[in-house]
Length: 192
Image (spheres, rainbow, N blue to C red):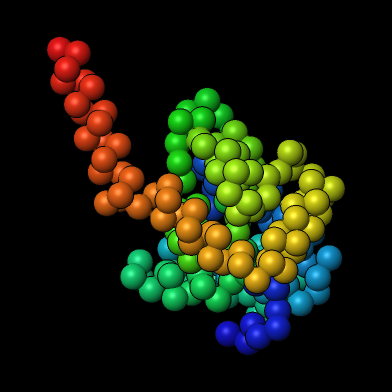
């Protein structure tokens, strides 16, 4: 992909709906202004041409971006090539109780995450485990601050291991998910 020595930002998933496309495009534009070597790794199944066209409007050319749909089992192979990943989700009432799968996937691949606040337990996760940056607002100064925080994180040689450890501690289905569900079901059954 021609990414050696470049700052690689990744995004996995759909654009539009809950996923704040315009804000992500704005973030990518700020990343590009701060570091002309920024490379975008976009893994999406839908509207690839629309996404690629919009990104080119921001000043990225074909050598600066990879927009493609890949098989689910290939996703980790691509993500590990990135330096960090983004997850911007519409902060609304229903999303306070959700936990984006993509964040667990990013962390499991050793990637710190840039996310907005107010989505499930993301705020606590990123702050407590030092595995990313949280946006206060969707504006250029917030994007610049988040990018500075990410740059600081990725300069730490242990950041990838910390991200993986966070994913295993919080999202492992065998050690975490299964026991939590069993406990919920046990409590529900003892109430009736």
